[in-house]
Amino acid sequence: MNVVSLPLGCVGFIALVACGGNGTAAPYAGPGDVEARARAGAGPETASVGGLMERAGSATASPSAGGAPAPGGGATPAVSGAAPADCRFGEIVPTQPYGEFEDDFFGHMVFDEATGELLLSTLTDVYVLRPGAAVLERLMARPRGSQASNDRFWVVGEQLLFPINDVFRESADPTRVPVASVSDRDGRNLRTVVSEPAPIGNARVNVVTKDVVMDGDDLLWIEYEAGGSLDVTYRARRASWRTQADPSTWYESPSELAQLVAAGGTGYVVDDPTAPTLAGRRSVMVRLADGRVEPSTALERLDGAVVAADEQSIIVSNDRMEDPERYGTFRVAPDGSGRQRLAALDGTSMRLVHRDGRWAFMATGAASSVDIFVYEPGSEPRRVGCIDGATPQTLELGDSEVFVSLFRGERAGATLTRFAL
Image (cartoon, rainbow, N blue to C red; front, side, top):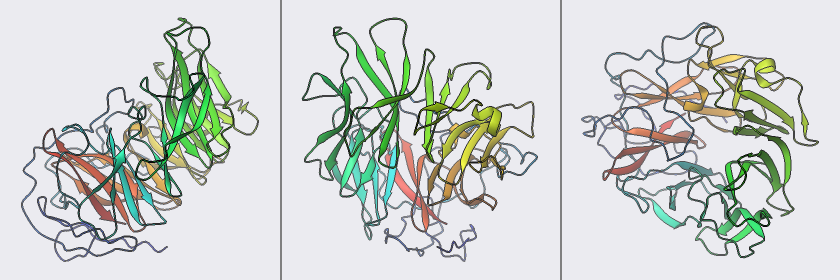
């Protein structure tokens, strides 16, 4: 697909985003929609909110303050002065509270290539933006037990797949612990597709699962048992959601595990994420086919901890600020070649998303603004938009646009915007 880079000024261009901060963007017209009415207008009335909102217990931090591009390239702008004049955007849907709580926001979005629909989730509910629509339609309530998953879910054909990972999970079989469920898009026909044997003999023990990711037909996650022995073992587990076979463990440790990533037949997980140094936070690499732990860590082989990956790219982050050449977030090929800095920021703060080899991420811009970037291997990151006066929460790539979910503040609610690629 050809990608057209458009200028970002608010006069004299056609783009996917309306320019007035309080304006209304054109209804979403589906894949291939590369035209919207550009409007000039006053900036948002809502006070600017620094950083990103976080769910309770989320391990992801707000964007770090950037600086001038560090040696080796990078697109992080300086953080000083007023927000850029082009930092305006239009709302695709009305700003209002969504879900059960007035301070909720859309923490996860999924673009359905088959239908051109954008699906969004709050803590409690799933919505859809259909092609041609200017309002969101509520599809269903999230299944009980899936509300502590950072709103994550996946589209699998005509159904939705949800991780089940909190203490309120329900199971029709008391001898099994549900890990994932699928349902129709209206919430009907809910059934468990991944489960594992429940702990035996101690009713106080609860299996906690977190960081669930999908890689092809496999789900991978981190789990540990809470409420039992003080000697906790953390396990990285894996199972096919299609075959419903019992999960297998591909890595375990007496230290906490976090930051699970999987792509290209390799699982990446950080062992002891609270260690004070990057070397102490071991970014382990495991071949999923046979469970073999690579003798070198990602820091040793790739010069950073893995924060995201797809078949073509591994995104690594290095927090050694004393070494400007190595600090920041970089893209490397799976063999470690083609190293390129994306930003002088911690990669866990950038809300990285990818689709068909293309990446999008956000980075702190001037003043309180947040810049939106698109990146393809072999080229420099391109700034395609800017947010000021609202808090961007997450990104999703469509065919010709990047969607950004926004939070306007408690009682004001959430909304959605987009920028052309």
